[in-house]
Image (tube, rainbow, N blue to C red):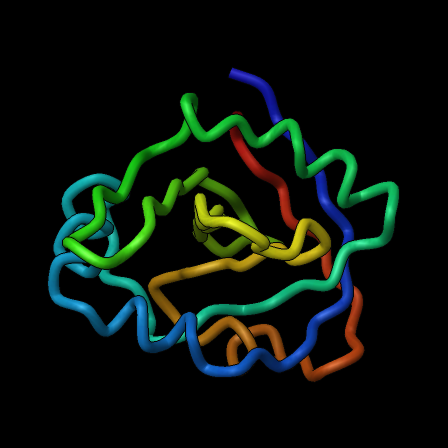
Length: 128
């Protein structure tokens, strides 16, 4: 297994990540397949053009698939670390999803634990 390191800027999303994580079938699959109960929400990173190019290396066929219920799209998880915190990067497999966004879930509220706000730069190490 290899690793990819992403650098991005934290920004507030529109709440769609929280809605997705709240779904019982998502939560159950994350618990079973990744081994933690996700905090209800995602940490959103805006990637530079160069980092967005690297994001293409997150091959959905090599990640941990969250099989969708009817009416939803496939989500793929990649184990990751944000500083020393266990996390997972979520790659939604859906049309027109922005390529310059990285969404992260974790068993804790990352913003609070790491004391990060919008505009902060962080590093995420992803296992591929």
